Amino acid sequence: MSGTSLDGVDAVLVDFTQSCPLEHTCYMPYDAALRAALLALNQRSEDELHRAAVLANRIARLYAESVRRLLDETGINPRQIVAIGCHGQTVRHYPQPENGYSIQLVNGALLAELTGIAVVTDFRSRDIAAGGQGAPLVPAFHQEVFAHSAIDRSIVNIGGIANITCLPVNGHVTGFDCGPGNILLDAWCARHLDTPYDRDGQWGVSGRVIPRLLENLQAFPYFSLPPPKSTGREMFNIDWLQSYLQGDEAAQDVQATLVALTATTIARAVSAYFPEADEIYLCGGGAHNGALVDQLRQGLPASDIKLTNALGIDADWVEACAFAWLAQRAIERAPGNLPDVTGANESRILGAIYPA
Image (cartoon, rainbow, N blue to C red; front, side):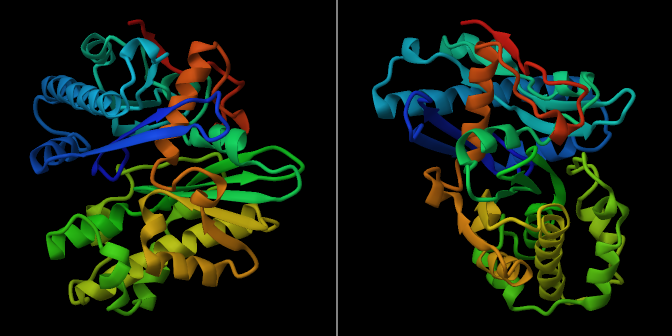
C-alpha cells in the first residue's frame, strides 16, 4: 500500500488462515525526487502519459524490492505466496457519475515479472464501472476483522484522507471519506518546517486555532454532502488551503487550525452517521498525532477511543492488510466492495489479475 500521504510503501506478509493474520512488515520510504514527481502528476502538466508510464515502472520496482525484503527477512519462498495485492499510487481520483475514473500508478505486469508472484491490482475501476465511487474499499475488510456481535464499533482511518467505517451490531455496514486527514497538515508542515510531518502534533500544539479560518474551512460544501462520497488530493491540497488565507496568519496557528479541522470533521461525521458507536478504533499515520487524538476524544466523549492495535492489527498496517485481503477475494472470485459504502449498483469482484 502507498497512500495519499505519499510517504512510501507499506508492505505486509499476511496469512488469513490464522486468527492474527499479520506476520511481518516492511516500510520503504519514497525519496524526495519520486515524491515530487508523483505530486506533479496530481495536476495537469506536459507529457503526462510518458511520465506516468515511467513512474509506474519505477514504483513497480520499488514494490518488488519491498516484497524481496519481506521474503528475505522471513525465509519464505516466493512460490509459497498466493498473490500480491497491490493498490498502486493514486494520482487522480474523479469518481463522477459519468466518465468517472480513479488512477493508481503501477505496472502490475512488471511487478509479477520481477517477483514471480501473481499480482492483483486496479481494485477501484470495477466498482466505479458499477456506478460506485471506487472508495473507500477498506470498510469490507474492517467488517471482516473488526466487527463485534454485541458492540457497535467505528473504525477511523486517518491517512492523507480520513475515512470512517460504521460497524453496527444491527444493520448494514456503512462508511465514507470524511475529508482531509494528514494531507493538509503534512503539506503545511513541509512548507514551513521542511519536514514531512508534525511529529506527535507538537508544532500544531504550539499554535492557536483561528476561529474565522476554521469556520470558513468547515463550510466547504464537501463536508455537508451525504454519503456515499470519496475525495482526494484533487480537492484538498495546499492551493485549496491557500485560497482561505489572508496572508498574515502565524504558520503555527494555521497548523493548529488544520488539526482542529481534521478532528472536528471526523467527530461530526461519526456523530451524524453513527452516534451509537460505543468504541472507536483509529488507524493510519494520524493515529500517532497526539494533539489530533486528544481533540477527537474531546469531540466524541461518549465513545472509547483506542488504536486498532487493541484488536490485533497494528494501526500502521491495517490498510496494507486490507488490500492483501481484497487480493484474496479476487483470487477466490468473491466480491470485495460494499455497495452501501461506495454507492455501486451491486457487489463486484475487484481487481485485475496478472498471473505469475
